Structures are given as structure tokens and as C-alpha cells.
Picture 1 (cartoon, helix red, strand yellow):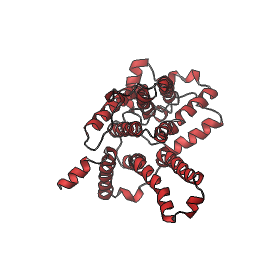
Picture 2 (cartoon, rainbow, N blue to C red):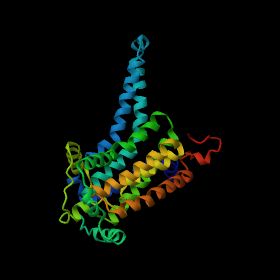
Picture 3 (cartoon, rainbow, N blue to C red):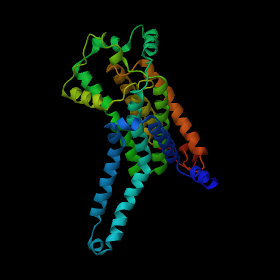
Amino acid sequence: MRKIFDFILHSRLENVMAAGVSICLLILFLTTRMFHSFQMGPLDFVFILLPMGLLGIKVFLGLLASGSDESSEANPMKYLAAYFRPLVKIVRDWFPFLLLCACYYALYTNLLSRANIHTADTSLAKMDAAIFGNQPSLLLEPFIRPQLTDFLNLVYFSHLIYFPGFALFFYLKKEEGAFRRLMMGYLTLFLMGIASYILIPAVGPEKFFADRYTHDLHGQIISQSVDYIIAVGRVDYDCFPSLHVGIPLLLALYLRDYCRKLFVPAVIYVFVMGFATIYLRYHYFVDVAAAFVYAPAAYFLNDFLLRRWPGERILTPAQRPETKPAT
């Protein structure tokens, strides 16, 4: 038992988190028979498998480009080992995050479909009304334009590739500390968001105030395509907080540490995303405001865990005074 305990303590933190959540979900499946209707959502594959697939293609093309007469004469087993070794590392580095994302989109939908949902929309809407005198999405109706709707739909949809794209950027630069700190922060925020969604479920203004809107969000072909993708892949009751805002904000905090020239554009993106979530009626204002609490909390909590977990040796830039600040 002591050896098992030591093994856990000296394992990667994301592996321990993924294994712990997965074991809890497995117990839930077996005790509730939820596995009979378990479903995987399309976002399970897009959010993490896309960069994993790109990395796999990069490895394959790299081996082809380096192929020569020597490779043709080499031992086939050694060539296969050289091919699969980087792929195994890619799966090791990315799989825990894929697993937890899949658990969120698949389990969360199945779990809440069996629960007696008492949504918090009324309370969230009252807070918005107390701040603005009315619902922000209703106040924005006179400003609805097809071109603006298309643009904000693109911004909202870009969430799918924004964070994985930067994670892939750090991974390709072989900045493992930055990559793992970024991804661990994402996992921390992700789990905080899941807990909040279960405790404070809400469907959002689009559904809650469906009978009060007098202007439809008509866009062009772009909006129609994005609306279809979102309708297929979106999880219900995931309003408070807005992770569409929280995750880019968390990324902005890490860009401040590792690539400061991108910090201001990242912050602008966060505010545009916040406006998009309200304009498109997916979130209340308080959902967006909550993201500015959750993201910094995840940022500092993640660093706290990484500093104290025995199996980790990841240092933040502030903990490495010999490292020059990023420019």
C-alpha cells in the first residue's frame, strides 16, 4: 500500500486527476446503469484530438522527410520504434486532458438528463436586471445587424481552436513547462466550472427568455453554419461561469508570463468574447463577470498545486529569477 501511495504522489498531477475523476465516473456508471445510454459529443474529439492529430501528422512527415538510403537499409523494427516513440509521448502528454474533456461533454449531458433540474436562471436574470435595469441581451436588440452577428458567431466559434492552438504552439516549441502549466491551469478551471454547473445549472437567456425577444439573430451563411455546429455540440446548463470567457482569460494570464507581446491582444479577445456571449444570448452578464473570478482563482490554485505536488518540478517564470522576462 505504501508503494502505491508513493507511486501516486510521484506521478504527474494531471494523470492523478484524470484517473481520480475517471474512477469516480466509472463507479457512477456501474451504480446507476448510466452506461446504457452513454453518448460522446463531437466536441470530445475537436477540442483535444485536433491538435493531437496535427502533431501525429507532423511526426509522420518528419520521418518521411528524414528518410534516406540509411533508413531503407535500417532494421524495420528500429524504424517502427523511432516512429512510434514520439507518438507515444504525444498521447502521454495530451491524453489526460482529452479524457477529462470527454468525461465533461459525455457524462455531464447524461447525468443532468436524469436529474431533476431546478435552474438558477431566475436568480441570474434578477442580478442582471439589478445591474442594468433589464436583461443585457434584450437591451442589445436594437443593435442587431447580420454582419455583427456573423462576426460574433465567428468569435464564439473560435473558442474551439483558440486554446488548443496556443497549447499546440508551446508544445511544438518544446516548452514543456509552459505547456503543462497551461494545460494544468485549464484542467483546474475546467473542473471548477463543472462543479459550478452542477451546483448552479442554467440554460441561458436564449432559452429562458425565448418568448421575450422581438429580433431574431439572423446572420449570413457563416452564422447558420456556426449555429448548427453549436446546436449539435453544446452542453446544456453550462452558463455560470462562462468558460468561453474564463478559458481565454486564463490563457491571457499565461501569455503575460511567457509571451507578453500577445497579452494585450489576448485581453481584447477576452472582452470581445464576453460581448459575443451576451449578444448571442448564450450567457448572462453575471456569467461573464464570474469568469473574471474563476480564471485568476484557477491560475493561482494551479501554481499552488504544482509547487507542492511531489511528482512535479514545474517552475513559474517568477520562481526562476535567472530567466529574462518574455518580450
